[in-house]
Length: 265
Image 1: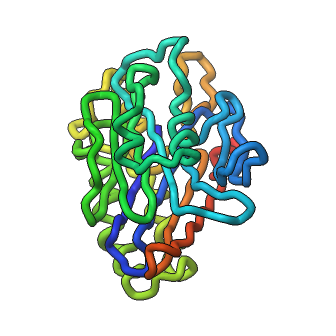
Image 2: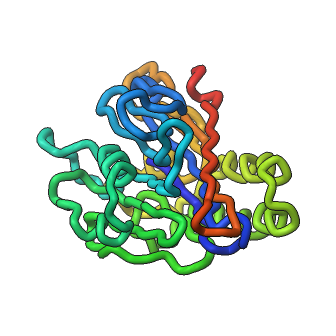
């Protein structure tokens, strides 16, 4: 499970600011952020399925402003063995020539387990899922998405939204250079405050797991029922993606990420 915050068209110099926590099983094989040798993609890579959770188009240091992120949809429905990798949605968009909206409309939704997909370029950003949310263009503003419906206010999404408005967006408005506000953004993305029981969403998983997954940043946690549980899941990667450029025809993407201390557990 993951969480993504997007400041879309709020700043002239940064039409996109995207902050992401990737939550995943700690043992799942993963390649860190790099230029893929076989595709025009700059991203981390899920070594198990071959896709990615967040990436940009890039080839020989050339970019076209395309970016994409995918999150699992948590509803207690088990994935089928014949379903395609959700990370493939990201790579397919990045290498496509379709507009974000056109791409979202042609996805074969039933081929995948539950997902929220956010895709865009310098002109348009779109969110779509296969749990009843039709492709929708994002309006200018701050958007926070996790593993429920895009318009559903979970404890973690609302907490992140509030802290970003108070602690990060004002800094970007003062000085858009990443060095000025990066530390504040990562601090907010590292908030491990869990939701009180009455604020937990009902997604079909046991309450103890719901509680463990309720914070913006998930500390390494055991999701097993063994007598001697070992940490097996948590926030693995934190990323910041920006598009920079006053001239929309010459927008430069910058994607940085780092592995968290959970990976060392």
